[in-house]
Image (cartoon, rainbow, N blue to C red):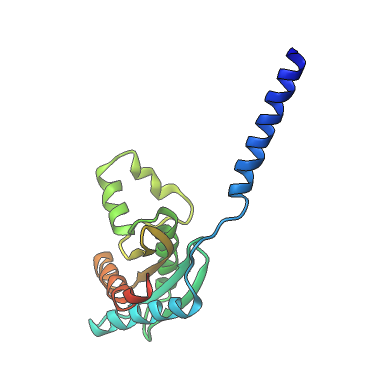
Length: 165
């Protein structure tokens, strides 16, 4: 009797494990398209150019992989790396890099984020969301302040907001 009960419990446990594993074996996720990534990068560079700033803009997908990059004429070479790191940081943390920077300045525990490889806690990285789901991020580098980089990123996302549904 005890052996049959143990086998029944084992069988039930295996069925439960198989059922829950099957439910999570294949996921459906939203991600940014190349076309939209190009629109966002171009829009960010244009928004900054309208204010006299020569910047680079990088758009990454939900996993932080680069999808599009644009660098304005006369933008410094460092703007490419900073825009990519800001985009990656924002996609990874699903938050703006400006908010993360401010949080790290106020919270000594969060200050250690600067030691994560690839993390750049300067304003200019903004997640791209559909509802609450992050499908990518845009990073802008080269304006005379991270808050200005972020304004260009937000202006670009505002122009494509109808496609983010």
